[in-house]
Image 1 (cartoon, one colour):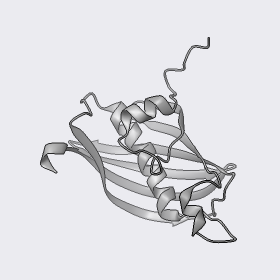
Image 2: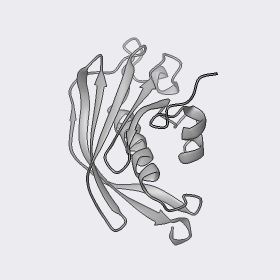
Image 3: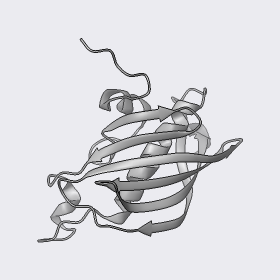
Image 4: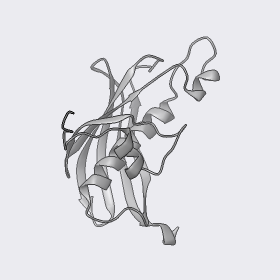
Length: 154
């Protein structure tokens, strides 16, 4: 039996941290995590994804908004793991995305590498830089702002 790396975690741990579920959970594994600093995760993009049925017939391309969502989920994992608050009564919501750029299409069979780095944190607000890569080439990037909210305040 292999010992798990404390700086990486699998889908079971991700399911315990994020509220997202299929078909909207877009992070398969975290391979590197540094508290209050950065996270590296990935999403295995398969032809079985429901969005490929209509985006686009004959030329399947992962929608850019879902690449941003995958980055947001990786960023959410960074924040959740970096804070000492319990997440059961909290929700992590993105409040903005800036400097969004799409550089390269993402296709079925690609492994989407998600890298998020914390820019700053103040009170309940977090600002991160997110970059998505395929085969070492930048596919998309953005600066993302998010807040931790109490579910009862929603």
